[in-house]
Amino acid sequence: MTADSIRVMIVDDTKETRSNIKKLLEFEDGIIVVGEAADGAEAVLLAQELKPDCILMDINMPGLDGISATEQIYKVIPDCMTIVISVQGEQEYLRRAMAAGARDYLIKPFSGDELISTIQWVWQLECARRSHNSAESTPLRSGRVIVVFSAKGGVGKSTIAVNLASSLVKQEQKVILVDLDLQFGDVPLMLNLPVKHSMADWYTDGCGSTGDYLLNHSSGLQVLAAPEVPEDGELITAEHISQMLNDLKPLADYIVVDTPQFFHETTLQSLEEADQIILAAVPDLSNLKNVHRCLNVLEKLNLAGKVKIAANKVGSEGIKLDQFSSHLQHPIWQSLPYDPRLTAQAAVQGIPVIDLNPKAKLSRALVHASEVLAGTEIKPGKKGLPLASLLFARKG
Image 1 (tube, rainbow, N blue to C red):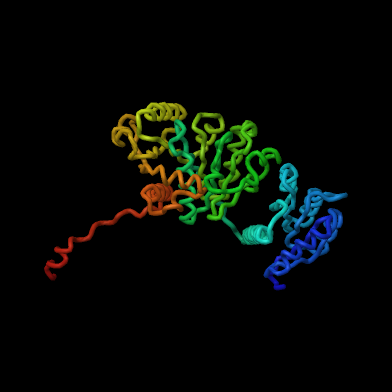
Image 2 (cartoon, rainbow, N blue to C red):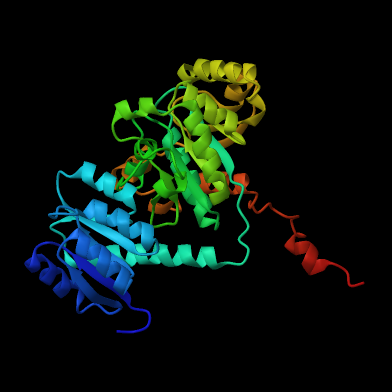
């Protein structure tokens, strides 16, 4: 045991289970089991005595169950990280446990690697939280809201949103990606990110701190997931959208919002909150009419000044960009080349286009767009003198 070891307590009413978990952990450097409890009441008392860093808490126990024990421990030892352990089919219990203060959960049966990685993950988050809270003065961010919208489906709106957000992270920006397609959002799927909690849980738990419901991607990108059940999307109102975005602004440099392809009260609220609106469009005749109508609506709402048009799938059959821009009477902000094979592979693998093939033209265009947004674009300087001029220049 070292001073930096993670001190773990195991709570389960089955002695054999406690013993098996202890065996999984005893050979792992940096983790030490400091105690065991056979029920929730014993766990509460022992936690106050031992003050472990982490508690592995079974949900179903006689007497005081794991959820109630987690809630009581969280009230007296808020820095103690509880990871609840459950079996398949107990999603409602898991949701209640997270609301009670649990940091994560494990589904039985789990491997030693799963157990250790989960403990280490919640410990890293806790260390980051403590470091943040101990800072003498931590300036709050004021996140710029970038809303990605489209006048119809199939134009690659979500691909643009996911890759802009991912690219901004690579520029060392703190980014939160909000999936506002409340019925059929698929942002977590495009990032191969398990949905442990979503807007629906935020609503059910009383609309508290939105930051507590963010999902953490390995890249550093954070995601606020849409409800997994379409009916739950109907619970979210325009007022909720305003509250969530304003909650998130101090936590990020950029908040990228992926929206559904229709004007709904929640979409309109996000457009009102936006600092910039990226209107995804495909330069073809079928899309021209819809984009033109969309611009007219945004004009009537006094939002047209925020709009930047991203022409996607350029190079497929369609009309020329200058003609497209002329018909719309609006400049094209960015041109994104057509690469159906790359976008399909990225979607299937759950990897952003810019990571799957960084050298592809589409990837470079998406990165360039994010650099323009962030103001980090490297503008070409003045060209040097021709080589012949340098060789034959007269000496002064």
